[in-house]
Length: 122
Image: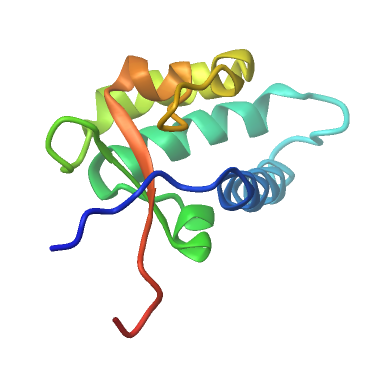
């Protein structure tokens, strides 16, 4: 298996935008996000816990060819650490404070790293 490198910020941002748009659409079925702001935020946190925790990808990450894995062993981070990562991501500030490996405080707290996947077909 080839070593996967840290994901570029543009792809990470694109994945986040896709996930955010999906959260807005889903939340609009039961609340107006223009009036009540918290439902899409809760959905984004749940996306991190339920998609990244066991599977390593949100729908946006899958489209952007990214995966969030354990920085220690490359495996899944689990639902609890996905939840921690999601809560800190929702706060935004921890996500923009990054180290040399493009790991935000939310990634460091969850023990995760977002990596770029190779192009399909390889």
